[in-house]
Amino acid sequence: MLAGGFIARFFQAKTYFLNPDEALHYLLASHNSAALTWKATQTTAHPPLFIFVLNWWHFLLPSPPGQSELLLRLPSLLAGTAACWLTYLWLKKIAVAQTPFLGLILAAFAPSLIELSAEIRQYALLLFFISACLYLSEKALQQNSPRLMVLSSLSLYGALLTHYSALLFAFSIGIYVLVRLYPGGRQPRLLVTWAVGQVVALALVAYFLLTHVPRLREMGMAQGIAETWLRKSIYHPGENNLLLFPAQQTLRVFTYVLSHGFLGAVALLVFLAGIVGLLRQKTSQPPTQPAPQPTPHQLALLVGLPFAANCAVAIAGLYPYGGTRHNVYLAPFALAGVAIGFAGWKPRPIWIRTLVLLLCLSFCNLFPAPPPMIRARNHQRALMDRAVAFLRQSAPPGSMLFADYQSGLLLGYYLCGHRVVEEFGPLDPYFRAECRPYTVITTQPQEWKFYSTDLPRELAGAASTFALAPGTKLWLFDAGWITDSAPPLRKELPQYGCPAPHDFGENILICELTLGGDSSRLP
Image (cartoon, rainbow, N blue to C red; front, side):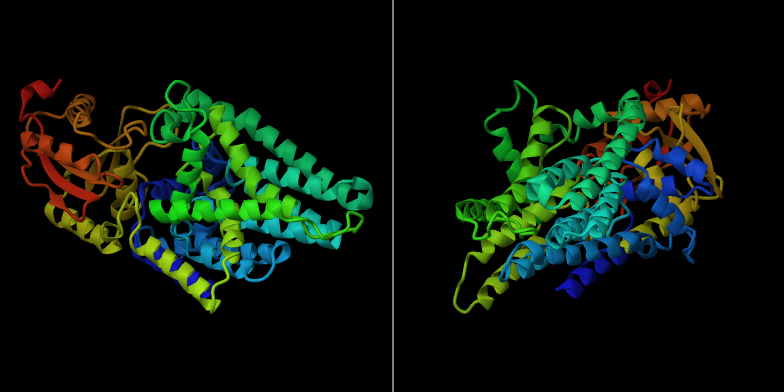
């Protein structure tokens, strides 16, 4: 099962071109000094560890930029696969019978985990550290081992340095360990070791909350995200029903993890059945036992508390909760609960249970609903190769290329071999860079992608900024997450001399535009 999960991740890592977020992470990590890399991490909404890992890693790669997606994704690929194995080891410590094996199947083939393990983003590394912390914490508690507790704390630090959602994980695992250690007199050395580790973790959190997070708020990044594509995942008084919000958003979490609405709902029901089953069980272990395995009630606390904590902060407007990768840290707990609930079904013969689970996961992978932002057929690396080849053949030397920010990230990686977007502030509305034999004009990050209402204004702004005369030819390169914006955008293109854009799938569009087709659109 682990090998199968690795192959599924390997296929995506090898087959798909970079999405804009991946290209952005590569841009942030492709500096030649630690100081510039640190400066670059301050412009993103995440702690710095993954960017530094990628920075160190990309210098070891033999292939030039534009040829090494698989190698760039290898750290995520290995971390995501290792997280599956550590989740299995953790479940072996806390559950019985076939639950760990069922959890391994879920972790190996959950579509969202496959996708994130095949991307140049923080989430696979986050899952690795979380699963390692869960396993090492449980093993330390059961063996009364301060050494293992130190390793658990180091794993927690790794998670905190990778993604801010680890704050909620740290809270949940902290409450669980306290409950397991109560009363503290039974394991004093372990309690002291854990407490020291928590103090260091709090200091680490305080540093980022006092330095990095205020900078992000000054940039308006947090508010901008909360008011746009993560709006559904944060409670808004007067817009959301407070009683329905937890149920709706928890369902969206399971829908995201399994990439399927109906089977996500089924998984949530199985998860709830597992939690209810744990709460109904009575412990058979004496309370005086030095290092017992978790009682059913303690296990229910561990699996359910992260969801309750995340929902509470979403209602407070502090962090999203719903169908988004920002909640993927909940996946180990979601899959553990589903495995526990599913293990309660004992058909005859018993192998039918594994077969049903594999069939459901296969269906989720083959027929995701909702579909990914870039469908598999539009995400093939061959499409990007064809688009770049077409641009080289069709655009004569000296041509100007025009792109929004996300498209500029991809142009820099696949065509130019270096960054052609502005990275450090203060940012100008338009940025001009050489991409021999071309010149590239890109917008600032706030103009992440073009909509139909944006294009006239942005063309006029670029013409004014760089004194482009009417009749100037510009090659529009639009790529990335454009499926929703492309149809209305196409209606604007004929006014600029491009009645039939060149498409490479549904997520790459190239079109030659002529400034001055409508003089009212120029400044």
